[in-house]
Image 1 (cartoon, helix red, strand yellow):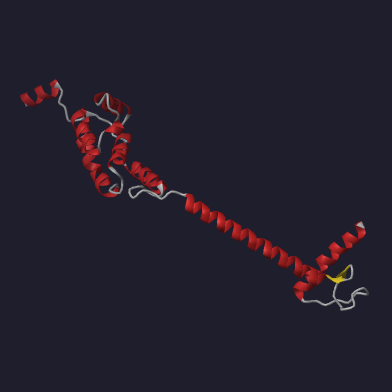
Image 2 (cartoon, one colour):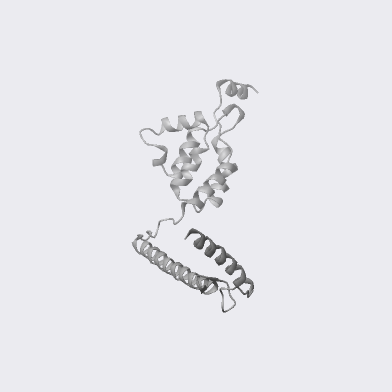
Length: 192
């Protein structure tokens, strides 16, 4: 029995090759001149197997399409103000964040928030115009240095930075990190 099955497998493989290239061979058992297995032409068996596989694949495709349509029907529609794909927003935030240098307050060097914001104002008004107010504020606060962020966060307590609008955040940072003059600088300017 095993040898019959093994020989049929070999004949099927040969029949597939012969069928593919249109080769007709004669065999003692094959009266019609085709490879045979158990008295049946092997090419006909291959065609039947091909047709059966094709019908199975068509059934699977129909089942998949039906399941896909069912998933689309079950999915709730997005609200009008919802953004369909957050990935572009994340990429935009990352891109903008890389363009902004970290703000470090140094009043002696006149590194104030006004100067820093004047340098990057176009990033917030033009490049980040698609972002909502809260996201812009989050981007701005993310570019503060460690001590600057801590000072800002302590100044707005009990609120959190995420609770303040972009315009209010800018105004608060402008007041916190404004130019200051030391007593020495004031006396020096007065005497000169």
